[in-house]
Length: 114
Image 1 (spheres, rainbow, N blue to C red):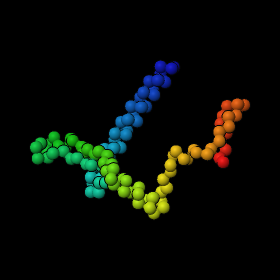
Image 2 (image 1 turned 90 degrees about the vertical axis):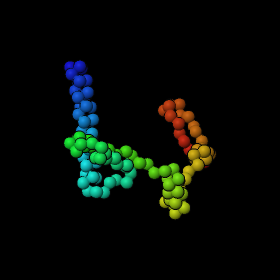
Image 3 (image 1 turned 60 degrees about the vertical axis):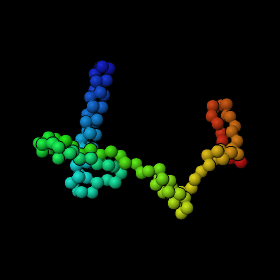
Image 4 (image 1 turned 135 degrees about the horizontal axis):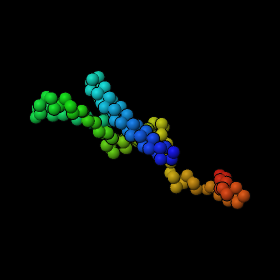
């Protein structure tokens, strides 16, 4: 029985992995058909000039995540801070001034702010 359960778990994992691949293929095809690709991805289509049209048909468009550059991210965060939509925290001072009292009965720490 234990061996059967383990095998079933492996089968389920495999089916989920296949399903995720199919969903990705469908997302890429949908983006291509709607002619409005997701700006967070770089799309690469097969090279149609160097191959037979039969071979190209079998190759799918590939997409890779295109995270914005560090400069753009930094500028965006600074803009959010300037307009009050984001507040930067100093993690060193975040815990400064907090008293920790060990509660031996409950094996936990009681935190009291001062």
